[in-house]
Image 1 (cartoon, rainbow, N blue to C red):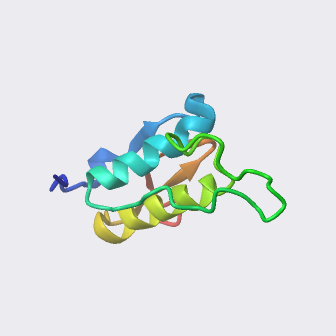
Image 2 (tube, one colour):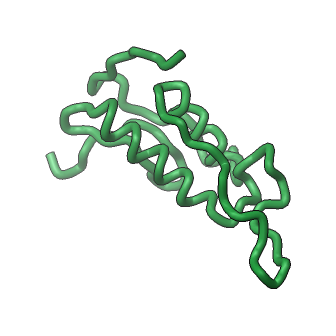
Length: 103
């Protein structure tokens, strides 16, 4: 069931730090899916040459398209859980809700 939480500028901060390394995308996608997104790991299994895109289907960690999945999850959060003067995204390797620096 999707969360119905409302976020405010007081919720600004890091939700997943870069120490997760290649597993950060797994957290971001799971976070968005917990909030109602339906992002699935559906990239092609390999190039025509046989080079594998995703050797581990249980994780986005080694997926050739992991950045695209992370961006899709981030875009979902910005569209469905917007916060005035803030944005969901990546900053210095961390992911979270950040204050818009233009304000």
